[in-house]
Image (cartoon, rainbow, N blue to C red; front, side):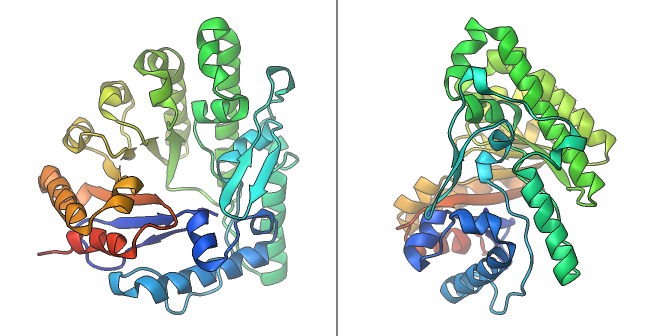
Length: 343
């Protein structure tokens, strides 16, 4: 469960915070271990408690909820969700998201298409939980899981050796990438069939900076175009997540038509992203290290400079502050909000 909250104060641009499991465990003893995935009742109660605790601590900056309702939420295995479907072992910890152990090349077992997802772990467990909530509480649990991204899935499943295989075993890599994309598309079909059609279908390109623009263009751009086509046929917006520096890839991504949303890393040129994609919502990922280190005065100055660069495009710009770690000073988190309030 990737916990996040939206700031409710009238900031100049929308703002989200994401706190890591280590923050919740060290501050409040809330575990992100095995039970949070398998026990849907516990997950709903835990999510409600987290909203209340966030309000007690940060109500002055519009975070949390004083009286949160009990809402049944879909759980997944974070970045281990899709690798688990390929056969990876999943491990749990109190202060970490679930993680997977990589497979050797001879043990990888690509899952089937949509009709078989209901029989494939971990999807069968998530589908079971949705059916349980419907039967016991007469409520709908919106079915969904982290579909990651084409190369992200491949790297998580097989490890960093995949990058060398682009040169040593290129056709084998293509088959793995094909399987990853097909699993993403099968997941999307499953969501739609279950009545849980997402607003945006994301391809998460966290690992793309590790392979470089040349490999992206040769091996991954075709999958980007295919995923864009799959989402478009279903009437779903398409989003590209690039948490590294976006600048080197902007012209390559521009080969994708009508991108609904782009998420860019903290070293990216905001103006370049806004100008290259005038039709897109641009979400800027604020460096959690910058927020942790501060000081508050530097955060204020940096936020003001960022909004200055955004200029007249504030209506299609937003901010995300992810991965807030234990020992990030509360005043630094407050400084982000204070800097974004209208003057």
